[in-house]
Length: 168
Image 1: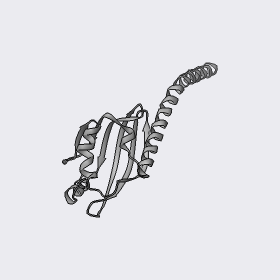
Image 2 (image 1 turned 90 degrees about the vertical axis):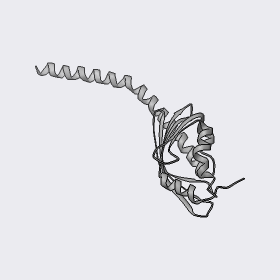
Image 3 (image 1 turned 180 degrees about the vertical axis):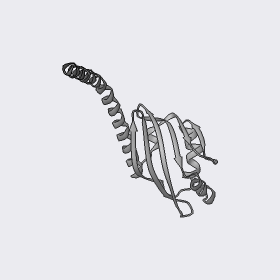
């Protein structure tokens, strides 16, 4: 009986080892994709913090950008142009300096990347604009095709209501 338990354990270990060996390539592929996406998002946010644009290099033309919450800004923009015009412009036009991100964490799993960051800028009235963000992206071919965004919409609305837009 002792011998059959040992051989049963040995067989189970062989089966488990064979299963693990077949799963390793799939895990490695997932890890490679996750790593590439995390590195890409880190690179873009580092460039943004240095004065570049987060949107130009990454937003797909047909991006679906959803801002969660309630208020006039909440909702979904279909396409890059809609996002820039309907969601971004109302804030950016009331800033005298660009938003500078301070990234706290980036997580990536397969085609999804999550960025937790704070952003700060100066408004057209000289006040400081600060907010906290969580952006969740789905990437295809190194472009954001979907975004789900969380931020303090009351702080955003306060900037829009209390600052004149820059006119060119």
